[in-house]
Length: 84
Image (cartoon, rainbow, N blue to C red; front, side):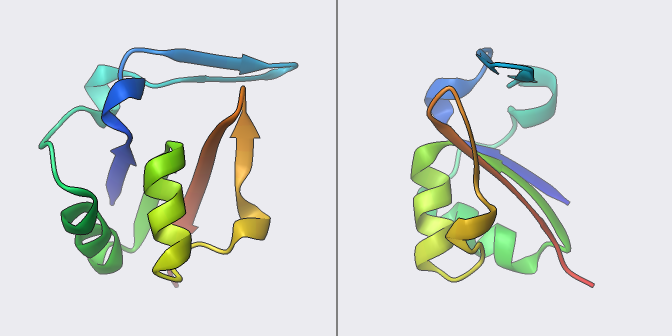
């Protein structure tokens, strides 16, 4: 499992209507990777939790996420990947 977020989102709370997501440092903060390094880690994972417009854009470009499954909370993209 990998959790990837855009660096600028660490510590933020995103709210929109009944949706709320906390980008907790304890969950998301680990190694700081380039976008390409993060994409390579996502490719190896069986479960991925992604938040941030930059990482989602690259995940879509890399065909790891289909844009129809992306959820936007306060304008920030969020997606999960589960490989079976």
